[in-house]
Image 1 (cartoon, one colour):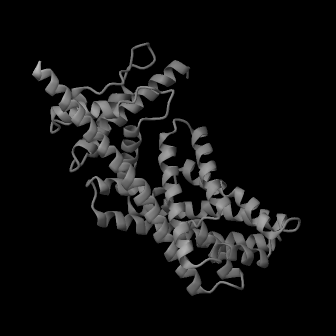
Image 2: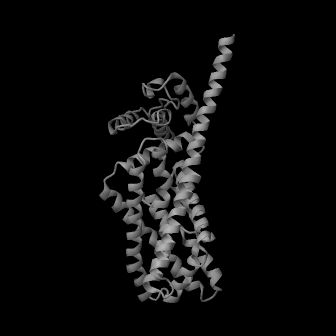
Image 3: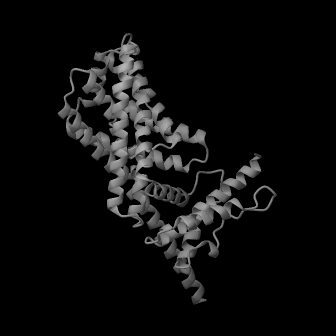
Length: 359
């Protein structure tokens, strides 16, 4: 594909995102059907891209729902315009893509959701397997503290597999899935049920990975029981409120990851973003509920220091902290920022019209 063709293809894709935003942002009660979304997709696929015909970046009146007022049409045209492919996507394009992806997740069957979440739980375990193996190797030549920090730099491996493979990971999906609820498109009880399925799938997958693969690693002598206990205490060796605060920060950073991955236009950029942010989580030793589940459950199964009560308390505290970090600090604030931008442009438009009428 030539660079010019790729540019126009991306333009059409962004135009489709902006079309969808018109119904999501201007009319919170709007409930788009699959047929409407398919119609938009078909229109964009039929766009005349390769032959030099310009693909307009501007939204037109025909792109909007009939229920939207002329004032709202003008406002959203200004806010959602995304006409520079040399830069990251516009705020509106990112928001609409996240909302539409979340709505697609809401429409998936329970079996599909659980299977995807279960797969993510297995895949994220690869991070801990690599970290533990590296820690066992490094602890023989370095002090334990430095060995833990250096080994934690392998943290992004499982996240890259999950994010690029598009499996459902709770912390990465927390803010994403709450957006339709914040915009009154989906009910809260449906969100809670969805979270429950994703959490269950992630935890079951992670526990199965711990039972099988960590046991395999022990038999392969990649690490020892004492290595598992040491790393578990590295995770658990804090008061509960410290773990809770750390989990909030980790959830916040995972929500930012989801936002930035959506803003990126190519896979390489997404890999770099996931590596930088999740690598920072690992380096700082922040508490991630799904990886932490595998770390602590491994010590429960094979170690000597973790009890069932301690494991369950840890899991509950970290899950709540991750949820608060993802929903409050990412979804709510970014959604409100967009709504404030809509109101600001409305005011500017009204002032401009008033000046014209006064002439």
